[in-house]
Image (spheres, rainbow over the protein chains, first blue to last red):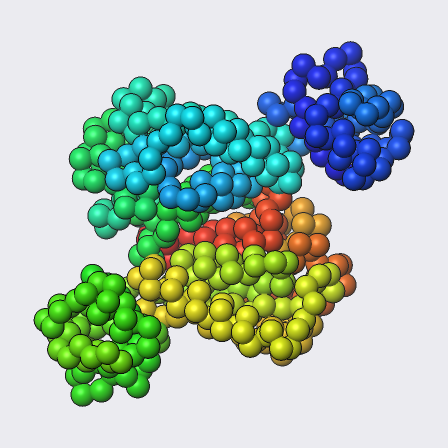
Length: 253
Length: 253
């Protein structure tokens, strides 16, 4: 069944109001008729089976037939802190990360970030990432659209945000001793397990410098390797996310 | 240190002969001089530290200084049997799969394959995938270049090849009961564990039809889900590979 995200405010008194581009998709692309059914998710975790009632040119109104209980979201809330990569690689990271189950993306500028920050383009870029996340979330049958933070400095994130996570991991090639599995297994004996929130930090193309890794460790992050094969920056986050969620039985048990 | 793949025949009597595009890369791009060192891997598992001796316009000769013992290849040989996807998605699958550690790619035509097979283009396409695999293997610091089979029919592969693997998995959305983890854990009690060779089968955009899944199961494949979030075909193989290799402690322990 076709899926659409609507805002929580678009759901009232058992009815759903679909607006924007989705109207065209329903009426022109799929050419649905009254009584056809779709799934509407509010992007914050609730989803509904909806029977279409009124199909207009600028809105579609439907009646909620059933509140769904789709267990698709990871119980471990995973945040990907990504050193801003070159070109349009962040598009791929947001799309694939959303499919795998990342809850939030934080693009950060690091000491070796090559991309020049451009405040003018910033809003447009973030809008594009948010659109990619929405489309990927629909396609993946997720009921939550991942959040995408504004680009921020890595140091600032470490100082202000890192402490709010149950577990913070930083992928660092220089670190050869600590595999992801060993670090995650070690936690079993300690604190909250499984963690409710995990942040995994991935460097840009040039990686982190040692100072950044030291600061991250000072702020509680644990340095991990993602294995003996060197992953490109746009691969590392998605692969790390898959392994972390697999470890905590969030990839289908 | 810069890495290059050479053919096993290019290594003789303690010397390595580098030819092809890599000559230009050494002399024009990196502008290396005699006595500079590089790593040469023969693509089948051996690698060497090599000191450059003679830099010509069509070949570079170097002396082997040290035979390296790089433990980068997975002990579980993983084959990705991939339903041929649309567009250039196979490029991405080969690149990312190589980074993660796939040993062999088998592009297959299935009942729902949309791509029209074109014998003329076939050779060119396979050469391109092989080149992508080589470049990705160099970048990932692998010592083996993954093999890429000719495009074959899925039924033929199941009939002729599937039985040669210790474990064959087929990702199937219709299967809701068996998570990857449950299937892999169940094997602990049985047969060879960890398996020496695993094939994971991923459908094209439209997935498999039920007949194909039944035939696969008849041939010994186990149907698995990759979790509640639906992965695109070009994401599924890479994510499955990461999870399988992680399970068998081949992603850095």
